[in-house]
Length: 189
Image (cartoon, rainbow, N blue to C red):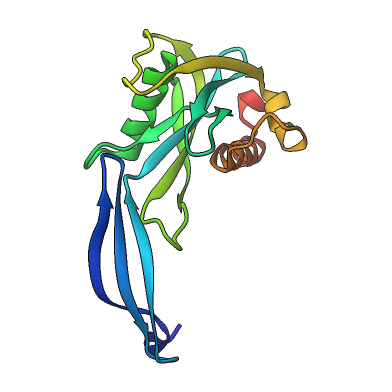
């Protein structure tokens, strides 16, 4: 894309700020079309999520109330990275805090921009295998989570049922399935 076809940010101001997000209002200009417009951007912490499989090929998932949609959802363990935290460290921390499980092995599957139209953050997708229960759950004050386990193949078929409604969890499932099939890992048996 040519430089004169990109938006210029003329002014940026904080419209709202809280613990998890800063919402910026931006006055922008598109020179190629001589258009001024206002946009918002949401500065959010990066996220890490973990498709976790225990030693019995059971997928470890969490069930929790999500206030944005006001629904109970089933998801992979996930959370935000602390300031300057390594994504892998955050993924392991979130898995252990939310489920009490620690990974035998963990691999980064992919890093993506969540919604670059309005958000600034990335999401890191990890696959953790040979997970074992090693700790007690240590939830944040605002978390209320149930731990669920599902057969690996049932979860891989979840695109065909209504169990998973969270788009990031669905992508996590697809990435894990692709990785396992490509690498013919032990869990694919």
